[in-house]
Length: 272
Image (cartoon, rainbow, N blue to C red; front, top):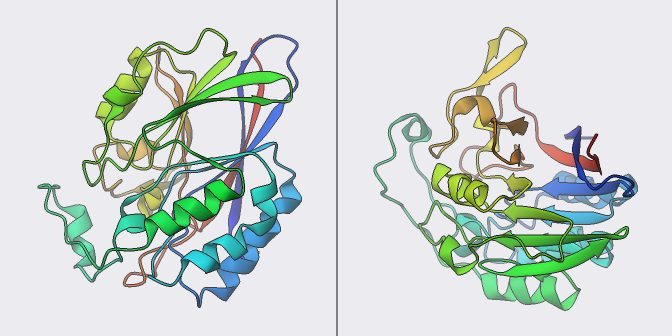
């Protein structure tokens, strides 16, 4: 197995509700030649999730849409939600990897436009729900979940105002889904009283330093504090946040140090 399974439980369901197993993945950055990663993705069906959530960056190549749909084939029979990241819209281009450690001035070096609409059509035709600037209600194991999402904040495509507001009163649980966990999005979702947020984009820092108790990310490639670069975290009076460190990397910087590829299995449980 070429990846790490990160597992966590979150006490957010109503008393007496059945557990919900959520498979959360992000940042596949697939190309047709990523045979090992494709095999790993196919193995995720063995975790028996009740719901699948993708926080974007499926693509890294203009011909990768069939590759993505093939890799996810069995999972597409399970209820799923998705948003897009910057690399679903534009092919990665070479940049100095040390630039990730400098302050972000908003400049973006974009590659060739990718067939994101083909990817969206392929996923939705199998039953997954595109929640880029959309809300939806979905019932899993008897619990009604309101999910809302934003498009990619790293490219300033996020328009949270289109989905803002208190959760649907019919929902037992409210979750947010976004690719890049910029603080403006987390703040807005928190103010709307969401329970749990899923995000990706950070690659967990991609290169981490040895640190007491584990390792420390040098960057999140956004304004999220580095201590929240991967895994499940919570600030007081804010929603839980699960950030996936992702499975892939840019084809131009295929290196991960102290930060293996990962997929999350988050079990929602009744609150105590």
